[in-house]
Image (cartoon, rainbow, N blue to C red):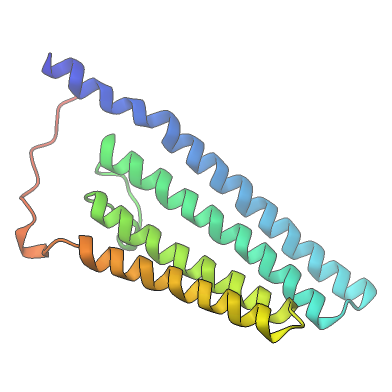
Amino acid sequence: MNRILAFTRYAVFVPAMASILGAILLMVQGSVAMVRVGIDVINEGTKLKLTIVEVLTAVDAILLGTVLLVIGYGLYELFIDEDLEVPVWLQVHDLDDLKSKLIGVVVAIIAVIFVGVYVDSNRASDVISYGVGAGALVAGLALFSYATRKDPSQKPPKKARIEQV
């Protein structure tokens, strides 16, 4: 029975790979959009305000791709192969690590969206309402992160690696 339960951890493989595939698609799309903006600026002399909005939209797609990549790597590392070779900042040892990495990227996306609204908006009330909303969301994420964090000194030691079935 233990072997069957241990094998079920591989059910996460498909969602992890789907996340990574989605990340690649978004990053490619964001990069293509960035190149198009550059070509438009050179050929047509696009207005600065429009260029900023288009660049921020492309960056937003790339950042969302980063979120999906972090999710995909994190799920794979947590459930399938903890020895996955990733940079130190991307290593995930438990769900708290994954949560904190996701919160960091989400805050970056919120900041990019807010700057896009700031640049694109002609009314101060729009900027203020989006700013208050973004600030409340970031404050809520910070509070959630603080309330659910675990003391690093209380982390249990790593268990021995489960042998392949």
